[in-house]
Image (tube, rainbow, N blue to C red; front, top):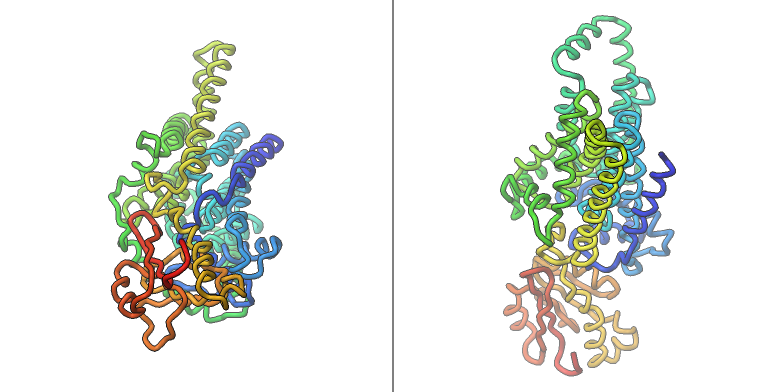
Length: 507
């Protein structure tokens, strides 16, 4: 089994590393890159409960970027940033093998194929955001929970669960939703009221209480150790612990939408709607095979548990007004595991009704067709049109226009400023004025003197170039006076910024 999983994982890694810079850097990727760049330049990570999630992404990415030779934001390349999610996504394929004792070997291989090929998974495995890493720790956490259920509350099992749970909360604060979903799904996995009653009665034994106390203490120590270690930046910033409670009101506030509010059926539309720009093959395959697993493999505690997690997570996220497509990984990931079990169950049911030779031919045709369709969908959404705003996975994508800003600015400042030319143009002074300018800090990262302002900086010297938002253009032009050329640049679909340079030279 592990040899087959290794081949699938190798294929998954190749897919994730193909042309990693084909898609422009997204706003969220740019924000994370700036934080990571400050760390590489010798800064200390400081947790920001307002909008940046937990620290694991940065601490795991830093050594990878260092090994690639990047020691600052200016030296980073997009492919370097996207190495970590690619590796994490490949690891997820191998982690599917950890579910073989509970779902079966063939089911684990089927789940690995979905994790390797499904468009939503591949897309965000090529994206420098927290969600792929969050899925990695989620799958490890689920595997540890099933191991605990299967083999009992040993010290190793409890420590693993506590460690993975802490890594989850250190990756994204939304881990509390995963924990809630696990609690709801565990009831189904235990088999209902009778099993809970037996568990309750067993707690009357004094030895059981002592055992639970010791195990609970060990879990608390491990969870707290990992949490404190990461949120304090390995002891260099203890104020990070004081900042973590601030994530609670921010989490509640953001759940209201903040411009990202959408109807409750949005995730279903993104995953099931037909058409060129949809993840329909992945969505319908997971749905049909998942239902098959529930109907035909319900006696398996792992199927009950994982299906319960998928359903509970989907319901909770659908009920929350705030919706973004990368959140689908929280339920698509475990759905891949359930789908693997469903495929095996449906094959076994068909085997009872069809001749083995006919069944094998049918399975090969259907399986090959499914893989072909999934692969085609993944190619379209992840490689052919990764930044098309009609692509449901490309949420508020950066347009290709932005990539031309740096070379064009270099040409412009060299044409009228000899001093800038002596420093290859990167010594030019640039001002970015306006509230909505991301991901420009990524595309301007090589310029040495860039100032970011929400309004015109009165009293400051006139720079060599200005980039401003639409609402600030008139005020900026008045401030600069005559003799400046204005050129619009697309930032995201429907969002323009304006580049102002002194007259002279050619565009």
